[in-house]
Amino acid sequence: MHRLGDYVFFGEGVFGNVTVTGPLAAGFLQVFPEGTPRPPEFSTINYQPNQTLSNAFVSGVSNDLDLISVYTLRTTHVIIDVVAFVISYGEVNPTILPLSGGAALSAEALAGRRAECAAAARRSRPRWR
Image (cartoon, rainbow, N blue to C red; front, side, top):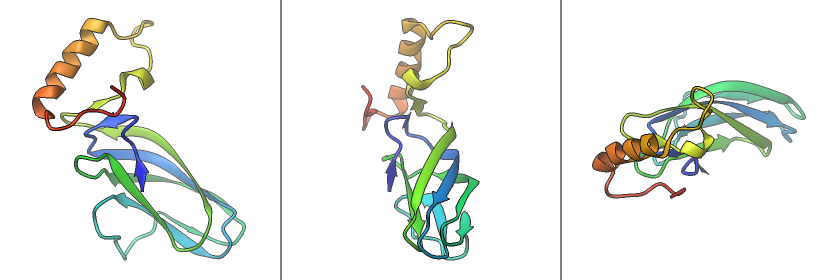
């Protein structure tokens, strides 16, 4: 289980890259939404012993908790790089957003975005606030 709550609030999906390095034996890795049963019919990466291998992934994000699950058949090191989030009424932590037009988003713009999101997400709060 990997918590994305430091980066996104009420995300619906995540795009990224996952890397396995130094597996002890041949196996596979899966990335899928936390809270759903592990799907038996797919793998994000198939790996061999002592191999380093990367692959892109797209996964849903668990409802309410902003979590994904990573399952490996064998012991290995895993690196996850998040590339983008799918968001409808949530928001991305503004401290990780790139500069817009050469300047950071204004306090007024951030306040407006938070007010819009608050109407749809009153039952919880982002971890970064």
